[in-house]
Amino acid sequence: MKTTYSTNLSLPGVDAGLLVLRIGVGILMLTHGVPKLITLFGSEEIQFADPFGLGEATTLVLAVFAEFLCSILVLIGLGTRLAVIPLMATMLTAIFIVHATDAFQVKELPVFYLLTYTVLLITGPGKYALDFYWLKRKK
Image (tube, rainbow, N blue to C red):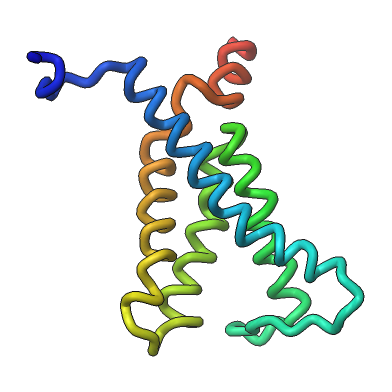
């Protein structure tokens, strides 16, 4: 019973929690990135939000980079702290530009993703990640 209410951090527990967080958020964001990837390589004309005036195709490529490629990197724990930066930028764009005038219910999901990516930026991917083994091997 004491361990249930303990506030002491267990490193294996934290590492396992970060693994679950990375895998979960990686898979969930892929559900947004894969359709964009299909749109990018599809035969239909690209119709995508262009909040910065870069062109719809360029903006879609940036979204695919973040939501597909960076999500895979987060999922496997490779370059995690760098990989979350484009994802955070994408979520900030969604919150403050694309959905600026929308109700909070519309912004809630990108806010949740942003908070999750912020945690991963601060903590790193944990022990159960390719980053950990890559750095361990280099020493």
